[in-house]
Image (cartoon, rainbow, N blue to C red; front, side):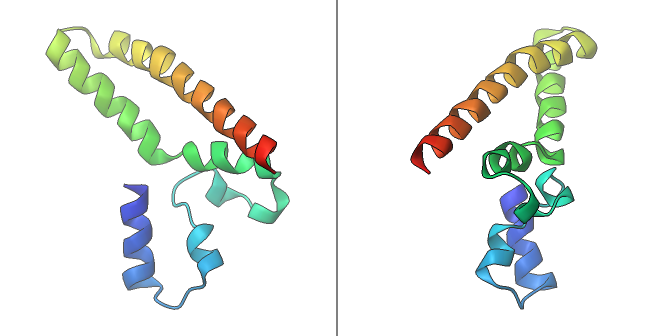
Length: 103
């Protein structure tokens, strides 16, 4: 969804853009709330990853799993946040570590 919204935004709403504008545009994310030049490079990926679409995915995942497994939504959401959230944090730390070691 973030990629589709980016393509739609620059395709229809703002056709005059530079490559830096396209690369730095992450709608509804923490990255969009800050000036990219003021953030340390290692914070770029985590701030781009934490967005409204990611949180909506957590709710959709918990809702669909609660329907399939017949478990209460609150309990399933807690499980999704604990497991998926912890794996997401580990993945972000891995990507940050790799990006810091490359630069």
